[in-house]
Length: 291
Ligand code: NCD
Image (cartoon, rainbow, N blue to C red):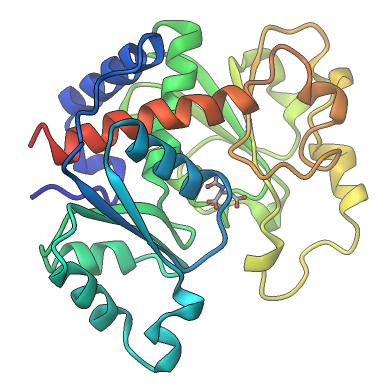
């Protein structure tokens, strides 16, 4: 039984297969490869893209999906997450897709080996399907990513998208640089810059991130318009440079990225969402069929 807690659960060969399958599915919708499969989603945190993308991906492949709304489940009556999970696993689904505020929840449930766990976002630690869809979107554009430089900009320390992305992109031979004000900067060995303008001529890709206000124990900036003056991605900053612009969503318009840049053809924000379905289809195939 294989789980997806983070992208290092996949070998490089599996990642190559996922990229290949996703590209094939994008060209032509496959047959209902997962017709007899059933997945349960269990989202303890809000989600727009990830939950619907998993559901669309599963349904495109013919699988059924059952949603459990934790706010209306027995975790509200004092049942532990483990017990809730074991009850769901007793119904013999083919996988459970989980999002949770704690970093170690997917790993803890995966260790029980009752059903494949697909991590749809855990704390600020990991969001492997987002990292893989971001990788796919870059690969689709550049063809080869070894040696390419991506600048991750914004609230990096709170971001599971950044954590998973950093691990995957460096493993695949990309250069990652971090751009953030001090309170948003994680502690690691990667090159760090306080301003994007200091490194912009050396980057091939910019990944902008949302300030995750709901994860800050106390407000970090009083005024996000002031923050935006330095960190919002604008046309004035990019000029006519050939840089791919990514954002995992939800975008805080004119704080993360300007309205004008969102409609610029270098912005791949909606392409990421579109690709997310194909990449999740390929991931479901890898975990439920190829194993
Ligand atoms: C992110 C998340 O929830 O981790 N969104 C996503 O899944 N695409 C990022 C965010 O909430 O800012």
